[in-house]
Amino acid sequence: SPPKQPPARPMVSYKVTVFTSDVKNAGTDAGVTVILYGDAGQSSPVKLPAKKAAFERNKTDEFNIEASDVGVIKEVSIGHDGGGWGAGWHLGHVIITKGSEKPVKFPCDRWLDKTEDDKKTTRILTPEPQATPPSSSS
Image (cartoon, rainbow, N blue to C red; front, side, top):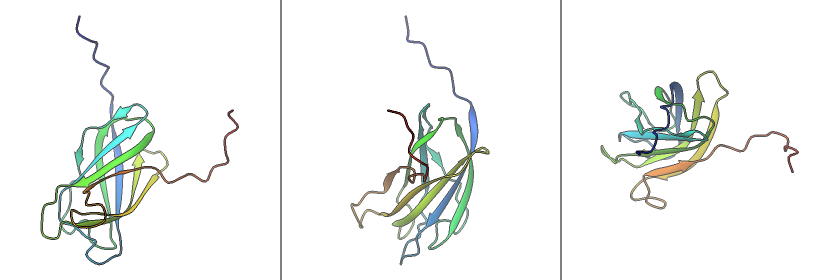
């Protein structure tokens, strides 16, 4: 018999706040896509609906997207398609806010550039360590 399909996860709203670094040529005109990875699964790739002059140096851009509920977000994949002139992008950090939950910051502070750093145009980001007291689970 065919394997049972897991039930489709509900769609939820996420706010994706992207901070482009304040370094020379940090901005990009390329198309930027995110994938959310959580303890309940992963989202499909979502292209951020870039406005004109999005992802410019020392700028913050906010996007509201719909994606499947991935549960607690563990990782974010963010990358660009290399389109446009000077596509290289220096990403400061990304903040993901799921519905009305607390925002989670994903630091990057690296180039997404075919000619800089390690030449990758996609990064897997993990949450900034939370300043919470250690749990007493043993």
